[in-house]
Image (cartoon, rainbow, N blue to C red; front, top):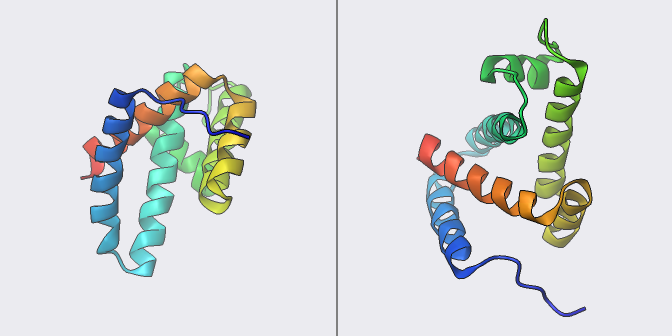
Length: 130
């Protein structure tokens, strides 16, 4: 199957900047620090991605849900499910080969939404953490 280029030159440049900043930051971490950072990043990206889709959970409520399995009072169950699904999708991206993770994510979302969320999340992480 031929490679399909889904990102524009501008999108590739934005992603390259994010990747560079992320790599520099992560290179200096111990294994424990790396795991903590990845957990924190996963929570924040799950929250931000869900927020983009209209989820009303706060970041603290998201932490409580994803770390301690405590659903927020007064929120819809669908919002908790959305956050848990985002966490699992991010886990798959980290644990699976790149191509399989992209296909899994694409099955759950349309391509334009994927591109927007992917780039927004990368820029959010870099701007918030580095």
